[in-house]
Length: 475
Image 1 (tube, rainbow, N blue to C red):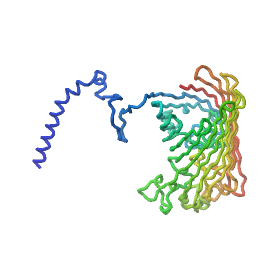
Image 2 (cartoon, one colour):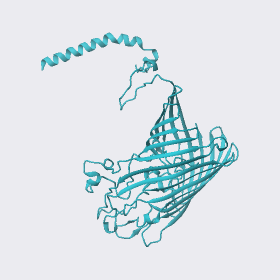
Image 3 (cartoon, helix red, strand yellow):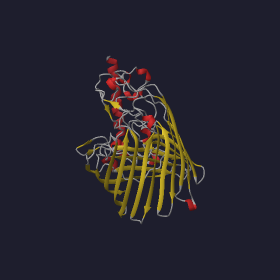
Image 4 (cartoon, helix red, strand yellow):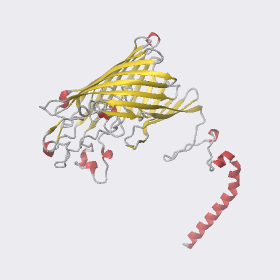
């Protein structure tokens, strides 16, 4: 023991001596700026020769090839919103609360909302052949809203790399869904979600290739990071967990998500040139398979989202084939008038497509088929004024939703406010440029929703209007 202690003391003394000798050398190499920065030496680009593989730290390491730039960007936004039926855009967990005609009649709300403001940073690098860029973007639409303390929320975080001057591009990270990727010019944050537009910001690996100047192909693998919808007391877990939540006391539900496969998708697009400049036509397809394994409701649990008398209602262990096929069109009718639209048909389309809890029948567990789409006309009256009119719909197959309702423990039927038989939206938008990148405008939206309900009972339908005065500055 004494020998080990003695050797340790000798080692420490030698180390101190070496540091004492080296310290003047290091100090001599510091600039006054480095000394003022607490000795944190920022390596110059030409001095960096190695790669830092530390996942929990970030060092200022740069490659030698090419020249680069870092550009911040963003949007400062304020919305003044009035809704006739509690179509509340300040309720992040309940996305369909403002993508449908929700709430009770005469339950109006008024709010000022700055949460759509966005901040991002983009870094680009190229040597004239290789092109590399990275983007990180946040908004303030997080779940927490305590005392106006709006937490940042990750929107985008992806890199794009091309080895041949952007003819072939690889995107890795969280970006907009590349399948059915056309977006309407809508101010509302939901962007026609639940009413025709299939979209999300989603982790992916995507390869794009320009076959010609007019034709682009795309292959992608996408996966929503939080897995399946956790709706109505029916968590999705592995089939071998025997009904226990998360597979046991030491496990967590997310680690038992039965969906192992991501979506595999493809897109082929034509971009017009010459007289057809501004015209786009694209076909999309995506598919995945999984075996559903929801936990049945527990009798006597007091959970209103369970079968009559507490009996299990959701059949587990089904083979789910989820797919979507769809088309996108953009056509510039005149120099000032443009048409855009999408039409898609799919089955078991849920979180990946901004359709929370719309993928499976809540009672049988069978996949739901749906026809969905939107159309929009935009008219640029002048440089200062733009007017937009649009309509969208989501029409699940009624027979697939038959009986997809919940019952209270008393056995009394409860109309669903989760799934709908039909949902549509109409919007009119006017935008006025004040100066440079400062804009103001007005948007009116009308919702009409027919909710799914018990078999043999009247299927309720609601209508709602939302009025939005907005101002935003893009920088």
